[in-house]
Image (tube, rainbow, N blue to C red):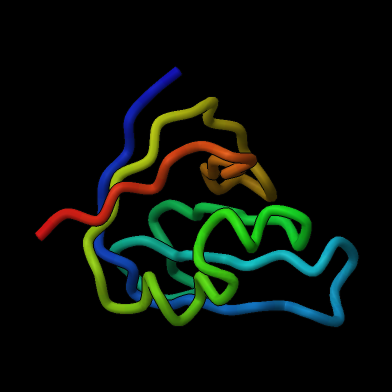
Length: 86
């Protein structure tokens, strides 16, 4: 478990991709993101229904298990709290 914080530099809802993920890319926009928070379609309602809009250009923290996808670190936000920092 780890807590990761960063600024959402880009946010994308990949509706046509398998699982319809939402990607919140921290500190630098895709494809140069430092860290990614992944929200699967079935969890979007937990994050306001449009997390790519509600978290865009905010500073956030999430706690969870970090794994690598194609060499880049990510946390799957399967019900984990995404905290907006003001």
